Image (tube, rainbow, N blue to C red; front, top):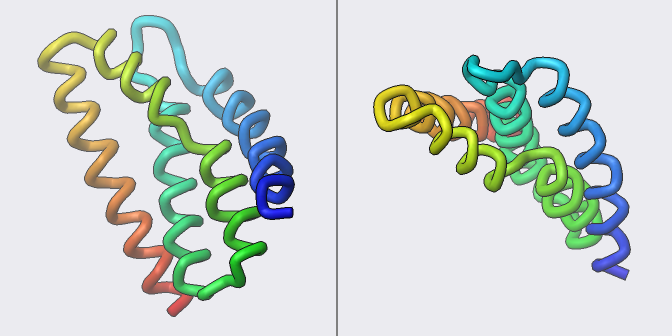
Length: 110
C-alpha cells in the first residue's frame, strides 16, 4: 500500500515539476524553474513534517508528491552547466533558500 501511495504522489508531483520548470527555465539563463520547485517542495516538506502526518499520508505527500515535485538530478546537471562561478553561486543560493523554506514551512505549521 505504501509503495502505491508514493507512486500516486509522484505521479502528481512530477508533471507539475515539468510544467513549472519548462515554463521558467530558459536556455543560457539561470534555471529559475528548477529553483522554484526545489524551494516550494522544501517548504511543503517542512510543513508536512510539522503536521506529524501518518505513515500513509507522509508516503503520499512527503515522499511521493514532494519527491516527485522536487529534483536533485536536474539541479545537479543545470548547476554543472552554469560553470564554476555561476554554478557555485546558484547551488549555494538554491540550497540556502530551500533549507530556509523547509524551516519556514515547519515553523508556520508547528
